[in-house]
Structures are given as C-alpha cells and as structure tokens.
Length: 154
Image (cartoon, rainbow, N blue to C red; front, side, top):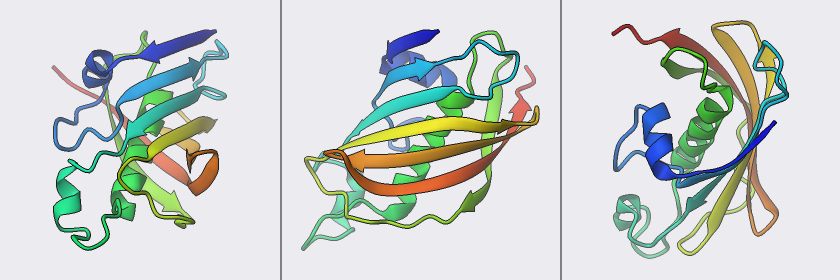
C-alpha cells in the first residue's frame, strides 16, 4: 500500500519536534507492505534548505553549510516516520545507535535534501532503519539507525 504526500500538519502529529528542530518539510511517499511488522516499510521525505535556517548564521558565516549532525537528525526524523503506523499507539522514537555516518558532499542553501529510509529489522521496541540522503540525485550520506520505540503514556 502506498500513502503519498504527507504535509507538515500530519508530520507534527507524529513527531514530537517543534521549530526550530523540525527538520523535514514533507513526506513524499510511504510504502507499507502491509505485514504485521514494520519490516519493509519505506519512506521518502523532503527537506528544503533555505538560507534563512537559523544554523547558517554561525555555520559558517563565510560559507554556509548545513551541519552534519542536523543532516543526521533529519534522517532520524525520516526514520521515525518510516516506523510510524496509524494503528499503533503514539510512540517516542529515540536514536540508540548510528552506524558509519559519512558526509560525501556539503548541503548548502538552495538544496533540496531527499531522504529515503527502509525498515530492515523490527524487533518490537527496537527497529533498524537504513537511510540515505541525496541532493540532485547525488548521494550526500547514508547511515543505519537503530531506534528504540517507547509508547507514550497519557
């Protein structure tokens, strides 16, 4: 089953983050194979990189570059969306491990960061998501994220 184009209002219902820390702008595609597990769920998200991002004021004034840790965080937020299912209770998703994160090119104002993620292991509260980010179809980075999922108690 394919669910396409999730707008920011729905993203804000799923993620606990708020401005200035929401680092994805739109979900372009979610593919859910329909299994009982999250295994095989895929996501494609968009992050527009604007010169108005608050981090550019200090990173770096002479050559604005998106900090790698924020690229990683945007990938983690995409991974959380990949883990999300409408039928699940509300969950907090936290990074437990990051494997072999390497930046291959800078991300600068005017870029559109496209992030793809796929759930490759589902052990209930522990999920592993492979993610990769691209600008103009050029690989920026890839990383495997181990996430811990904890139901939110009301």
